[in-house]
Image (cartoon, rainbow, N blue to C red; front, side):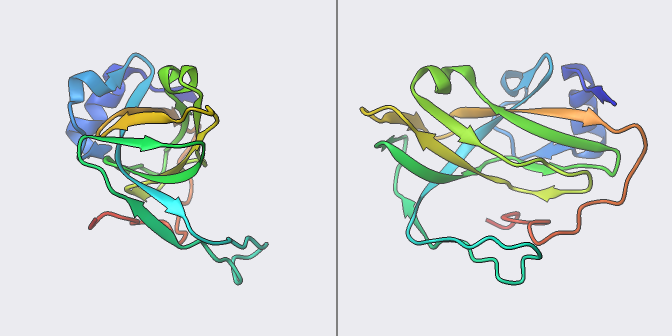
Length: 168
């Protein structure tokens, strides 16, 4: 396994469509990853349910938080949709970490693993810990995706989130 460099990520974007719908390629490519940006934010309006085999999985209802250029988020938990559509081959996975400025402002981003074979416009959770809240601009860079090449190709992701939000 090896972490992909910014140059390798750029080549995969240009040749294989690793990422599309980005805001500014030169700004978003980092030495060891790619910054993903904020498209929309939602309040959770209900309870979720998680089980072993997903047969009784329920996601909370959402209410979109309206904003044009900026949005103020008081302390709480939110779901956010990213601008970028990620398309991973069967030999690449990704993990994400919050941007350090977001952390310094008293907020964090919760993510899951991007499995090899995943394609979609991902959603993440934003947790605002700061008692005074946080202001986020549309297209703010909120996470950095780190891509890892697997030691060998694997069966690609086939879960319910494959292809999520591509048309939205």
